[in-house]
Length: 590
Image 1: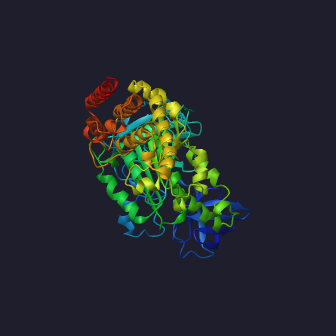
Image 2: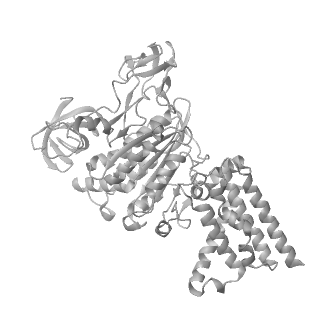
Image 3: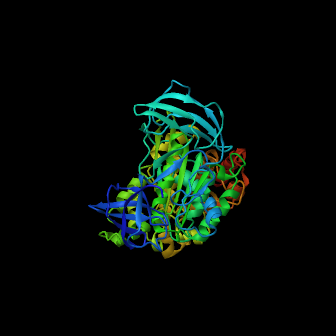
């Protein structure tokens, strides 16, 4: 068996095992437990005893079984072959596990994260005599048609390159170069290992002033997310958290997608695993899996692996960030991860805090979201990790601990609304409870790219939506007919905005994705209707006349009828709107 004996099992409590007779174990050390060689991790040390959390079913483990220490923390294998692979929470490839153990994962099966037999077309980017420091790029591999994999020197290594192989095909285990370090010659391969709980080092953090464009209008225009930013998507069962993440994964302008299914239902993860390979990347026309890594950890898998899964995912994301990529992580859902923390904490008999969660829950949530950012990497590139975390509050109660603590550490909040979801309004992101703190940061980018006052337009429509909320309260008491035309027109414009702008149809070719130019022009038209219509009402035009203009019917359908490639029709709608209102005002003035 791999490793050295560090102790014997004293007590088994589900996935938590107490070890006695500890000799030289380390905190967070990877261990193998018993004759079945179950994978675990040391989480507590006290004198000659330790506590290990095991990432597999512990049925059959008995007191007295030997525990072997591996000598390193739980780490992921980083190199070519990650892209398009489906892993479990501790980076075991599920498709390879299926071949080895069948439909049900056998205990003690340990497989490498990367295929050690596959050969990759390596191209050297350094030469003998070059001085290399940690994180530098010394070669490249074309991993998929979309992804060029840059081979990075381990962040903790530095030295002079002694030898390097010529271009050719090699496996991830073959020595391709040797590095002269203060400790002697170090062989270099296409892969290296990194502990999942330790953030990978960077040179510097950048300001978050470039938005992650998703093509979803309610997100990009009302509640934008910056590249390298963090956002929470809270919502009850059936409100569309997973659907929203799927839409962002397909359409956002990130280079790499890491999707973490953390504690989700098995049938839901099955849908993800079946659908993602079928999704076509709109930029290349090939499968979306060519730039996606999936981590599947369903609710019936061992609870400890669920706790580790988000760290595995964020480490893979940081690795591609260090290569100069923009990575988006979909964590679905962090509530299930927090529940895993609660269960493990309870089994270790720690003092519970609110609703039974451990007292360190806020710290763990903060540690996860703090690993996002837009960075200057050690390789001299710039890359980002954007975290999009779904939260599943029981009963849709946003006051529960996970949602509340998450709000403290994210700068963007897309609150899913049950009423919108029931009305089949998707994305069901409510405009009253949602917010984004990136608006001031990304406004210069929007205004430079579109040439329009994006910040002012957004502020104007948000102000209208706030007015509509107050008016709806009055309408519930007295009905809409009791309001003057000027106030009824606010309701009219907001209704048009919700149906013609905020709601999107993922099955319509023109509507499932909107370019930033289309979004701004659509918003300009709706606000022009508001400004000109309000003035016309003051001049005596009735709201019925405004509502019956033929151009309004066209505006209501513009999201479906106008393609992203040709927006000239939107300019015509604006001109027709101006002419129609001019003609009505001329009649009333005469």
